[in-house]
Length: 242
Image (cartoon, rainbow, N blue to C red; front, side):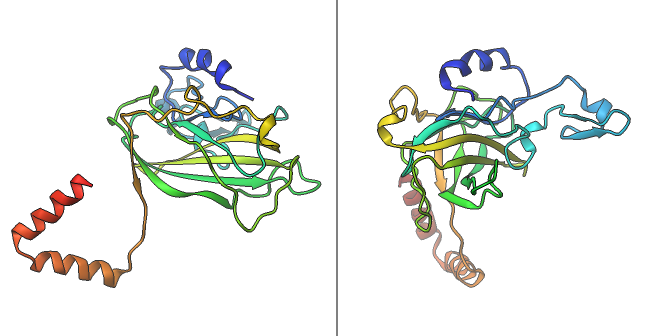
């Protein structure tokens, strides 16, 4: 499994590759910043293609688009993670078009007798939006969640194998998948969160996601239309100052 110490050289070598998201802590299932050199003009797609004459898959720029973990098989070299949850650090800007992106973080649990989780259906972080500095690549920027809790309805034990899945939904609709395979452990056995591995770059900002019923949304819109212009401008300025 990729760790931060071994990841930096890899990232430097692939900095020109068309790519997407990197998990820098607690680890990474594997490098799926993959471009095999096949031109989209030859394959007819920038995503996943299949050559029936050879039986081979082609990934011009699209390996990370494969559910559930970006086309990388589960690893046997697992990272230890606190049994009650731990930190997560991500670099979200390894491709153009990511000035806005939605993020989801889930876990999948290895059931007894299974080599891999049957699904990734346990959200551990509410969805949120990341606002990047620009719409071209910004691979050096990162965000970190220092403490992710476990779902309240689960009773997980030390030694349980889980997979942490990070989904980046880019503003053009592409879903990008990356994972890290973990073994739950006593916190004393886990690489700690530090200012060196948990970095929130100052050029990234965040927005919460929420829903509103159509009736409530319509009422709010009508109220704004009926309000004097000075009141509306005051609300906008106040929102920008929050």
